[in-house]
Image (cartoon, rainbow, N blue to C red; front, side, top):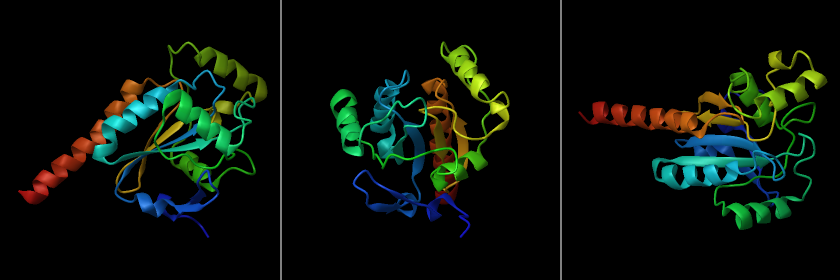
Length: 196
């Protein structure tokens, strides 16, 4: 059955239990694929800070470990979860390790990539040239493919379930914060007009 909304998807938590994304209706979602042996792994610290600051505004970060990018998350779900809690004190929900691209890609990520395509790594980031070189060797036309390119790609979903932004791992967190603030400010304006 074709999924019409992000809330139609069912995923598995890191204990293997099914979780319907309909549980998160009305929330702001930041959905991210992660790995614990990646140059971007320290972003866990920034993600946890974001979560602590914006949780009261309805932000939920959904973490999906993935081992598809140069084998940077080979551990079990339990080991990955332990690593994140011990090293980065993460408290946001973590799900079962998945594929985010290819024939076995988690349908949720296929959907997210259809909604927000790849528009390039961020110029000026020190790892942009490294990532571009890796991808050019594997696929000279990689920029035309909407699939997730690397660990810590993030998708922002507003309170209505609309996928509003995609952030590559090279994106500055200040840009992500501005996008989240925009959703919050829009909601406040709508609430003010409704009450007025």
